[in-house]
Length: 201
Image (cartoon, rainbow, N blue to C red; front, side):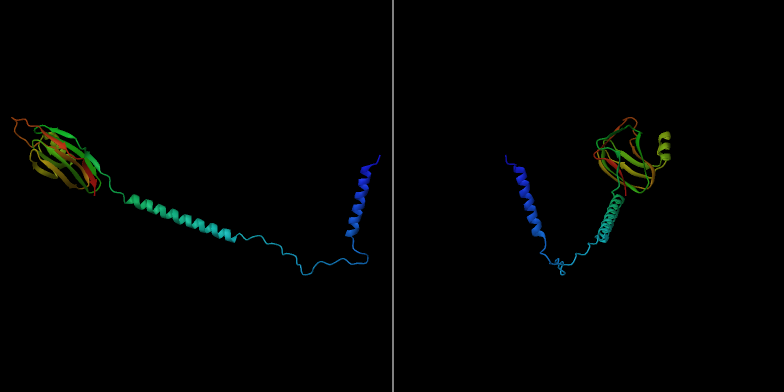
């Protein structure tokens, strides 16, 4: 039997020898020197980080400027917010004030303020602004001992719009029944068409 493996190995050996022979230089020939015109490429230097550092610094500066501007706008807006009004009597509120009686609404303000509101009455009304001491004396004695401001007598069935400036301090806004006829025992009703508000100016 023919051994094909040996034959194959022999053929491959000859083929290898042939290639080895082809790769050898002819006898007496000198090795060919490398092409002198081909220079070795210079070693690449690592990229400098200067540009990245400059870009990062610019981004940080821009971010700080934007943040400072945003904070300035926020504080500016918060410092210029409109003053809040306090409701002294809500729209739809009714006071029932018997003869010789009154109703007081206490409030205080740290600066100049305005009281605004619209209301009506059935049988006449007088408004006062008093200090807490004056109002206490009114409560004890039943007579007006003093006041800071008065509306005078407001006629019955009158729609009255109050627009009053008050100075800093503690005050009482007094709604008083002006009737003095004891035989009639008139009770006046006060009804608010709008909120009675205290607004800083």
